[in-house]
Image (cartoon, rainbow over all chains, first blue to last red; front, side, top):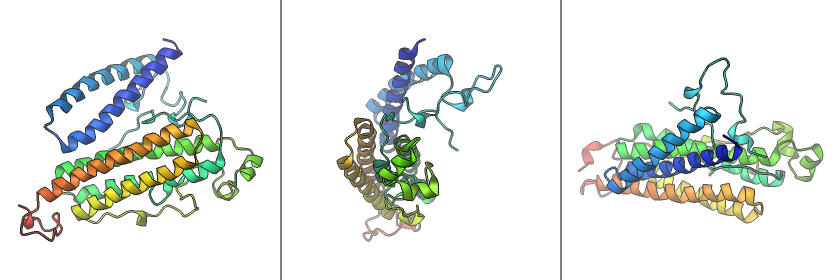
Length: 85
Length: 202
């Protein structure tokens, strides 16, 4: 996968995570809202797939998912606060 | 427990350094209405909160505030990264630089260090929710004040995102307050502490 697909996949993780971040707060005070629960399930599935694909192709977002074959890769990539530029 | 997710909640990619603006924005890290105070406020309040929904809101908003603190720090870091001594002097950044070089340290824009007296954890859910609603409004006003000074699109976008979150959190704390007052017994019309005198629940 190239740089563009990496950016697209990462943007998908950012967007779907944000939907869940906001929905989580709503569901804390509206735990029986079926429409919100359906939305949660739908976005959660897309996010899980995106995180799995990203981790497989470009490295882990969570240190729990570090695949230790021959070296510890968690500290190889730039940190999020460094930005792109 | 908490574990680190290797991403920002909203992207921060700033091309142009601006130490003067960094000095202003750092108030939302360690200032009186900043994200560190917000996170510590909610994560401290939750332990004695007996209502499970309200404790959930405090945990989840308190956690999101940690992510906001990271975004604010990323903005300040990118605005000051690799500043030259000349840029430090021209940007009026020398009084911060002399103590912290280009590191992040929680203080207000005026140099007042972070202090837990910026927030309260009172053990009374009505008191705490009203404190939290006020806190979200104070943070929103601070972001409005920052936005009037920002002309760089790269800085403006994440700040606008953070400002909007203050509004959403205010709404959620408003609902938490309603959930708590719905539990009040009619005999408790003075609304005394529900978590300390549970016999006054409905």
